[in-house]
Length: 314
Image 1 (cartoon, rainbow, N blue to C red):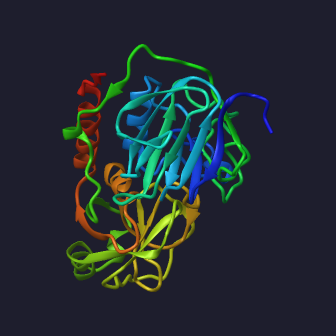
Image 2 (cartoon, rainbow, N blue to C red; image 1 turned 180 degrees about the vertical axis):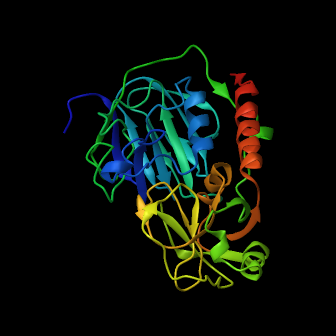
């Protein structure tokens, strides 16, 4: 057990992971990106703590995390609507809170969305692996030990108090719905799918199956036929939509394998892949085609709104 002070894990929750913005530049040695499933909420948690946006935080999937502070600091929780309590008192999400040594911070279970982000002022002081603290359990790297957080783990951080706290106006909070539209850039392999199959894909509704995790979301709905059974294994981008032999789409996410051989009908924009990461089993999905230029526009508009948003002081 570390002798450093920080937060003691009292209850580890369903799946709680240390994440920074992700691990890049290591595909050539078989290491995937990792990083937050909902990058937008992750960035907001850090901004509310006045951290650089890439600062290490905790991604809490489903809920059930309880921490005990060992020092004075500031935290913020964003993302899915998980009830937040500090010493048993209900507190608001999407704002920062002053924490004293001995305080108990608990996240209940999400009723909208799947993943929340808990950031602390100046971040958790975790040693990087291959240039990142992002935890990828399948690869056994990142975080404290390459695995999810466990009871009695200590997350080290610095004591840091602020003269004020920050809050994001409730009107600007994202809504986590059970239905999302995934704007999708058609793949260079789209010619392996007939015009009819492409229309079928973009006009059908799919549901999130029970097989969804940080590696990928398997969907159920209209089967999509492809003219070939597979392609030579090649690198796979974030948001790639694979069509395996059963015709049911798989959207590949942060912890995806680095190479694969299923045909790909397109790639979901990063903005919408983050929305998919907040869907649970039964969530409804529709795909809508967009151009690469439109995807870039969506991204930069979102980034501009984030940068122009002024936080309230409380």
